[in-house]
Length: 128
Image (cartoon, rainbow, N blue to C red):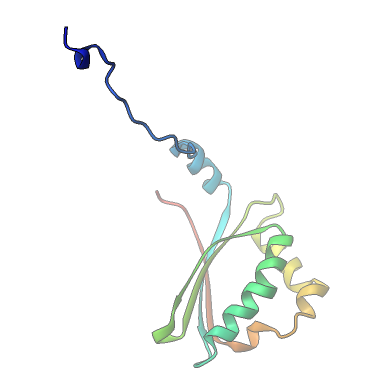
């Protein structure tokens, strides 16, 4: 018998962290109210906007129970897009009102909202 034939075959595998099942992912996303926001930022101030948004808005939003699901920038057209979610029983609108009325948000300095020239917020519903 050939010695190489007696050896067990080498099997290679990679262990990865298991991601949520598609059904669980759908359940999580279906329980979250989501808004897509589209801002036109004052020309030449995108970096100022991003810095203020990251340092002030994001932590305040998260402390108020919101989740930032993503953010993107189109520098050529001075556009900033982000997706925000909220899953509290009181609903997105009530939480949003509390967020804007909070002392922390009212006193946010510098207020990155001063750099927004045009804004649209659209509540969206999950399809897939």
